[in-house]
Length: 252
Image 1 (cartoon, helix red, strand yellow):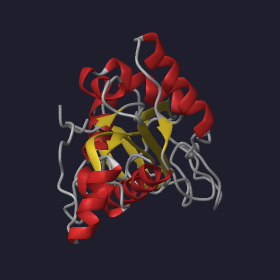
Image 2: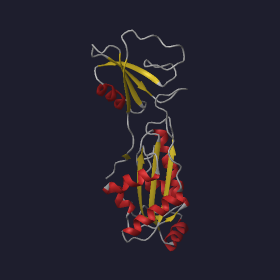
Image 3: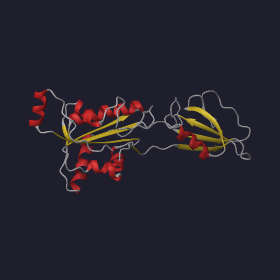
Image 4: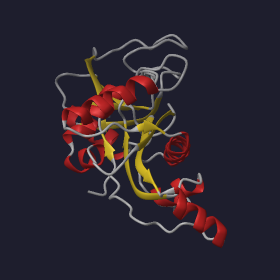
């Protein structure tokens, strides 16, 4: 499975019924019609809340939620307010994710592997750096992908950190607001779970990047790998070669 996971992303909707002659709000205040600073960036006429939600989903890179206002209950027309979650009084404010605790994440990961009779993995600064740089790249692009914006693969990114590997696998995801949620999602996905439970890996790296202005806000990247033996690495260094990608696990 070579698809990025997007879990936990939802489109919020609020519906309201207003009187036919709704008084105009005072400047700078929030009302059913919205304010200049509540995050409403577009208003459309619709005939159902589902139609309003569909407009938000179609503009997922900007839209955080919708508010529908039916001015006259005797008529089907509604105002659909698409909201980007920004402004001084955002209707759909962004919620930061829970801080990533690497010690807890590694402990959870190894406990899960132990349940399956597998050996533990250890934290790798090099794999963590590669994961961090890719999570930052995904946040800038506003999308979860295994291909970097420079065209790199996860194998390329790992070797840039001078980690020469015999096997490497990558999991990515976007939208989850905690380690617990993304770890659970990966376990439930067969392809991602395969990387979690590889018997031929020994090292681990994990990164979370939060960008409230991006499409999915949170971006996760995880790497599992095993290094080449020292003799092989030494030989390649003496030859002045870059170690070949010996075996790249399917990225999930």
